[in-house]
Amino acid sequence: MTDTIDIAFGPFGQGGSGDLVVFIGDDLALGGPAREALGGGGTDLVARAAASEKFKGRSLSALVLPAPAGVAADRLVVVGLGSEADRGKIDWPVLGGFTASKVSGRTARIILDLPGVAPAADQAASFALGARLRSYSFDRYKTKKKPEAEDKARTTLTVLVADPAAANREAEGARTLAEGVVLARDLINEPPNVLFPEEFARRAGELTKLGVEVEILEPARLRDLGMGALLAVAQGSVREPRVVVMRWNGGPTGEAPVAFIGKGVVFDSGGVSIKPGGGMEDMKGDMGGAAAVVGALHALASRKARCNVVGAIGLVENMPDGASYRPSDIITSMSGQTIEVINTDAEGRLVLADVITHIVRSAKPKAMVDLATLTGAIIVALGQDIAGMFSNDDTLAEKIRAAGEATGEAVWRMPLIPAYDKAIDSKFADMKNTGGRHGGAATAASFIKRYVEDVPWAHLDIAGVAMSSTSNEINRSWGAGWGVRLLDRLIRDTYEAR
Image (cartoon, rainbow, N blue to C red):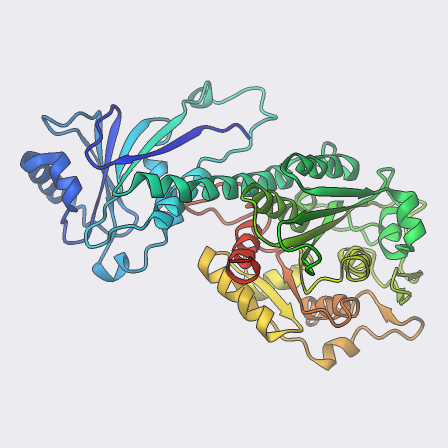
């Protein structure tokens, strides 16, 4: 992804060139700094144009006008905020993304003073975060650009606020958080012939530049550790697997870390239980959980988070081959538990089982969250706007729910009951790798739960939100980078030393 946006903060009244952006409610009233910048003539122009264009100032609507006489600007962009109630619950990243879309490829000053709302520094930073995320595009493999995309102009925004210094301080964290999301999006969007396990591991290894300790476990080491479940998934591919363990030691020495585990199936054909051809191209995104973990570690290390965090990703390719694992095989996981393979397309839980066991034993985390594009069943249940959450710990589940609400990366807690666990009992081994069609997301979570021991744990099934993503004001990408902001907020609000 090419960076195409610059954002700075300045004081109200700062001059400049390009467009001028102001905000207005459904009563068509402007804030004080906007009225001052436009003068009486400009205010009257907005009122007349609004009447002519039937512009009602509804939330996330815009009116673009020639700049009023006496106002140093090319255009005047009026962004609607809606009712007083709407203004009391503004989603600042969404507002930033929408506003940036109206001045894309241009230079603009944005008077971030809303009628009845004086944004705090952290809200101004969140506005800038949304603008950065909206500017993302992934076109590195296009050799013939559309004419309008040739030499794409940079978007240069100067956000005018009451306290530019405070906004700049807050915005640095927002900038590095955006970098983490962009890193995750880039990973998800890459084709599998480019981002195979070894290459994914190499890119994760670049986190060492930020002070992250990175350990890459190659096949010989995985065999020594007894990761029979992960290795079984990988054995049908010519691309050898990797496990990457990333450690950010920003908290007190010796304090137990929080662990993030990501499923990294860089391409999932289904193996011998091969998927239908239609839509199989989307399976390059079956590593969305691993991408989120790498992006989160980037964000946490970049802002020097005051917490010990371990990120671990299992990287495999699931392919059909004469050497592939088969339905009816019985494999032994690193934990020593045996697994009867019913369907080779239920592979992600096998990868997670061994990576989770390794982290539980080696890192002894105080809490653990795994993210995985695990089941189509969760998409049937929840669609593509919310992730499914399963947990063995009510406190951790509530912390994640709150982080999801704060960031807009929402989760919905799903049930874990003994009947789901019983559904994966096997006649021939300790368990089988699928409990059948009914309750598929829940039986998959129950499988993973057998490996977490007594660690407080949550499983986020992100199959619906990580890839083929819903287009919105802060994301126009096939891969959303979902989970980076949620994990960062979870650490910030719950585990970070004050």
